[in-house]
Every structure is written in C-alpha cells, then in structure tokens.
Amino acid sequence: ASRSRLRILKMPAALVISATLPRFLHAAAEAAAGGFNASWHPAVFGAGHANGTCARAKHVGVENLLLTHREAWARIDAAGEAAAVFEDDIAYLGPDRELRQDVQQCDNTPGCLLWLGVHHEFMTTHALYVTPTAARLLLNITKGLCAGPGTDHIIRAACWRKVVNGRRWKRLRCQMPTVRSKQAALFASGYFVQDHIRKPST
Image (cartoon, rainbow, N blue to C red; front, side):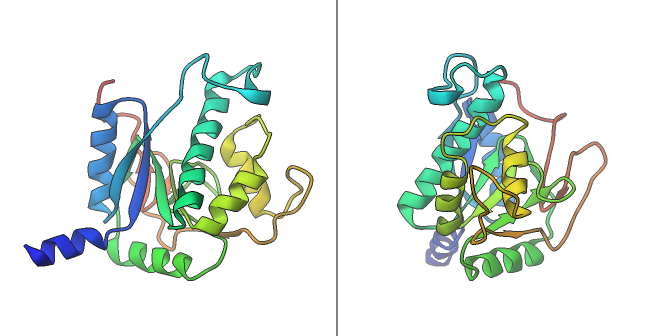
C-alpha cells in the first residue's frame, strides 16, 4: 500500500478544464492513463461569462476558452509547480516512456511549454504541459487580449517569435512531442489526442 501511495504522490499534476462532472471524470481517467493526477478546473464556457475587453467579443466561447486557460496558468504560477492543462475531450495514446522523458526534459528547461498533443506545429490547446515560468509568460503574452483567431494562434505566434502584445517573447521555450501517435477518427497527434466522438454526455 505504501508503494502505491508513493507512486500516486509522484504523479505529475494536471488541471482538466471541464464544465460538467461526467466529462471531467472521463478526461481524468484518460489523464491517469498517461500518469497524471487530475484536478477539476471549472470551465467558463457559455454566453455571459466573458469579461473585461472581451465582453463584447463576437465569439464569446472562444474568448471564454482563453479566459479559462488563463485561470489555469494563474494556478500553476501561484503554486510554483508545473502541471498539464487538459481540455475534457482528451484521449491517451502513449507511449509512456517517451511521454515521461519529454516531461522530465521540460521540467529541466526554464520557460518550457510542452505540447502533449498537437495539430501541425504549436497548434491546439487540448493538452499542454506548462512550467511555472511558462505560465507567467503566457499570462503576460495574453494580458488584455481577446482570443481573436484562437488561443492556439496567439501562443503559436509567440513560439515563432512574432510580435504578440507589443513584444517578442524569447524566454518562452516551446517543445513539440517526441512521438506523434495518431489514431483514425481522433483529431491531432501526440501522447494525447482529441476524441470528438466518444465523449460522455453533458
């Protein structure tokens, strides 16, 4: 039993963005399959939740996604501990060994932001591993911004050293997954992909 408790304590943390308990539990099980200890991070999806400069945005759901990710990054920054941030439609494909190696490498790289699942290069936000320094950088990168074309587009531009929010963010270290696992009918590639078909009911 003590060995089991020790193994659980050593599991990397994860925040699962979800608006409902069934979807969180489904995603938490997928996260656990990849070795992550998941906590629920409530989503603010739906009209009426956007605030500040995004309150009058045309696509409120897109803005709420950015706001929800910002809240997750703020939790990581405040805790001073790296964590994965998952959206609740993840599916774990593995492999375990390379995932753990990528996470360990990211932990040892200041400013590291690791895609655990990706579409093309630095696209999608369904599975990110965020170090505290990267969390603080992401908060600064997106401060006062509406998502516009999408949260992933903003982050990708920063990874490509383009000017975002008035400057280039050279301290952000963007890392792609070493292994790009794929499965038919599932979106993206990497250790965690997106399952738009077998998701639980809300």
